[in-house]
Image 1 (tube, rainbow, N blue to C red):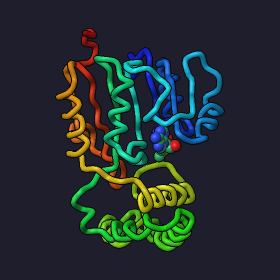
Image 2: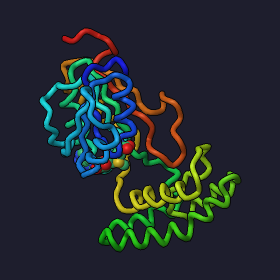
Image 3: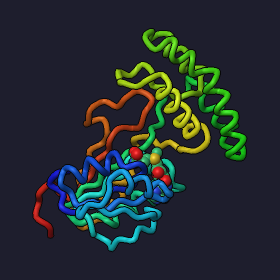
Image 4: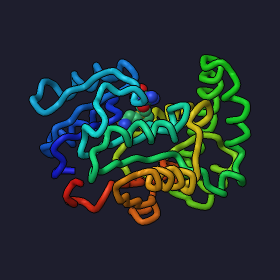
Length: 249
Ligand SMILES: C[S@@+](CC[C@H](N)C(=O)[O-])C[C@H]1O[C@@H](n2cnc3c(N)ncnc32)[C@H](O)[C@@H]1O
């Protein structure tokens, strides 16, 4: 990342990652669909190497091939077609550039859980109603997740019946309230939107791009990277057109 001269950071939200990239010396152009860009700008302030805009990544205000690196984490599953979104990100990337994406993963273990059943019902409801129901589910299940956070077998059992995404067992310096907030946000996301793709599907999208490209493409699926945290995103899929540092055609 530090070697990147010109980097698009989609998507910005509050600015934690954007700030890290700016601090690392990259020239960062951030976008987000929502008014979160205001928070992003407030948190980072005026910097010569940073700009932020409210925009849809599928119609981003950047010319084709504008960036040495495009980073898009926690976003693809929120767009109507992750495949089209990957294509749009790809368009922004210069030959030899690096694309960093992730996606919620579909795994076989989902077949052993009740969560997908809740999801089938809740995602058909109006958002306000789905939010009220999700809040009740979190009020009921989060205290249980918290209570068994140190007992692995009970956690596994609970995750079969509870539709909530809780990370209480992770070694993080967060308070109970912070864990509960996180659980509320991620559970609503999980039960009402956030489609999933198997790692295979996302890699297949890359393979099609590779076939259509004039440049060599290197795809590094998530399983070659450090193991993902349980219950979270698919991990990082990285791809670049050509080896890092390769001369541009
Ligand atoms: C879960 S947040 C992740 C934000 C950031 N990457 C982070 O980790 O803090 C998802 C973000 O995607 C944004 N988003 C969803 N669809 C988008 C689109 N089509 N174009 C740009 N941003 C989008 C939302 O506004 C939201 O801020």
